[in-house]
Amino acid sequence: MKADDKMTNHLSESPQERTFQYQSSLPPLPVPSLEGSLSKYLDAVRPFASETEFQATVDVVQKFQEGIGQELHHKLLQRAKTRRNWREHGAPESWKNGARYGSVQNAVLHLQSTWS
Image 1 (cartoon, rainbow, N blue to C red):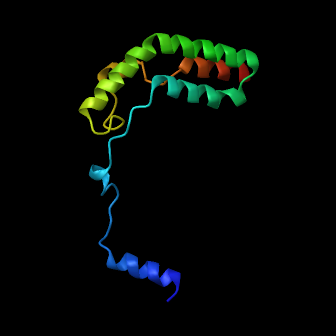
Image 2: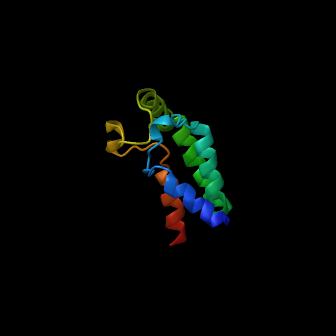
Image 3: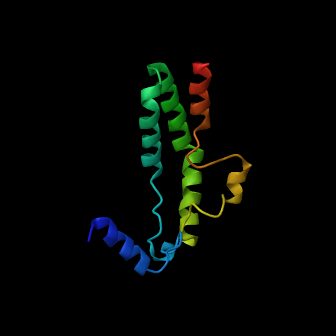
């Protein structure tokens, strides 16, 4: 019996699986640290920015981290305590007023404006 035949037999004998069938058995998603998220953001921006652009982005990220970023991260941690998956079912009411966790829009806009 060829490997393809074994796979076909295995699939035909197993019950039909559905998307998200095992969702309830998965552990909850961890909330990444604010510092880690911002570090990854800066790592992603670095190859596309000049030294001046990157430094301006670092400054915006630091202001975000020291300011509203901490408040939003705290809200995200609170949300994770009450939800199995803190990323699903829409954003909290406070985010609908324009503030979004991980959204360093000023830095992105700054970089985009220099490219045009």
